[in-house]
Amino acid sequence: MKKIVFITGVAGFIGSNLAKQLLKTEPRMIVVGLDNMNAYYNVRIKEARLAELEKYPNFTFIKGNLADKTLISQIFEEYKPQIVVNLGAQAGVRYSITNPDAYIESNMLGFYNILEACRHSYDNGAPGVQHLVYASSSSVYGTNKKVPYSTDDKVDNPVSLYAATKKSNELMAHAYAKLYNIPCTGLRFFTVYGPAGRPDMAYFGFTNKLLKGETIQIFNYGNCKRDFTYIDDIVEGIARVMKKPPEKKNGEDGLPIPPYALYNIGNNHSENLYLCGNEGLEHPANHQWCLP
Image: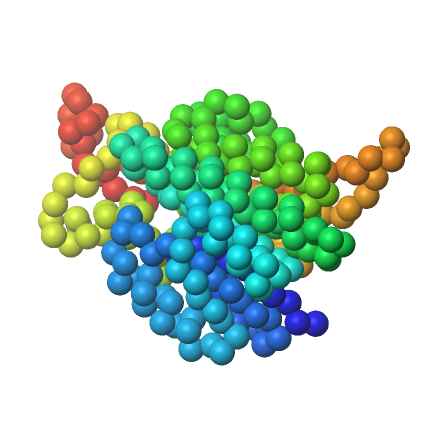
C-alpha cells in the first residue's frame, strides 16, 4: 500500500539516513522532507545528504522552518501524510546555554505546529495521520544515577534547556494523544554516531585534535559516560516503530486511552573516558583523557 511519509529535519544526520533507507526498501513509499538548512554546522554536509536523496523520484524536498505554522499547514493539506516523523530540532546541549532562542523556536513552537497539523488532519472526517513518531533524547535523564535507564524513571529535573524542551515535547505529545486520539510515539535517542555524522559531536572533535596534536578539551574533569548508538541501528528502530502505532482504544469510562508510547533507542553499554598517563598530577583538569 502506498504510504506518504513526512520527515522533518530530513537533511540532518538521522533524518537523511532514515529517508534513504525508506526510499531504498519501500518503493511505493513517498517521502516528503522538510529542513531549514541552518548553519549550526557546515551546510555543505546537509547539501551532500540532500543530493543523495534527490536521486529518488519519490522524494520531495521543501526548504522551510518548523516554526512557520502556515507552511506546515500547507504541507499537510497538500500531501496529506499518513506517517509523520519529526526529527527536526535544534540539537546540542552546550549550544542551548548561549543560544536559547533557537531551541524555543524549533523544539517548542515547531513541535507545537506539528501537533496542531496532525490534529487538523482529521478535520471533516478525513483519515488523517496514522502515526506521529518524534525524536526525544536521553538528555532528559539528566543526573539520573539509576542504570539502566527506564522510560518509567522520573525525569523532572533537566540540567539543560535542550533536555527541558525534549521533555516538554513528550508532555505535549501525550496531551494531544489524549485530547485528539493521535497515535504518538516518542524515541529517546542515545548519542548517535556513524559516517558523515554531525561534526559537532565529541568523537569528531577528539579525532581532529588528535590528528593536529592538540589538547582535547574535557568537561566535568573527564567524568563522562555515554551510550553510543550506531546510525543504522537508530534507523532500524525508527522504521520498525513507524509501522506499529499505539492502538486506539477506550477505557472503562468509555473515553479514549491515550494512544501513546515512549521508547529508549540506544546501546546498553556505556563508554567511559579514562586517564592516559600523568596519573600523579594533583589537578584532574590538567590530565590528558582518552577514549577507550
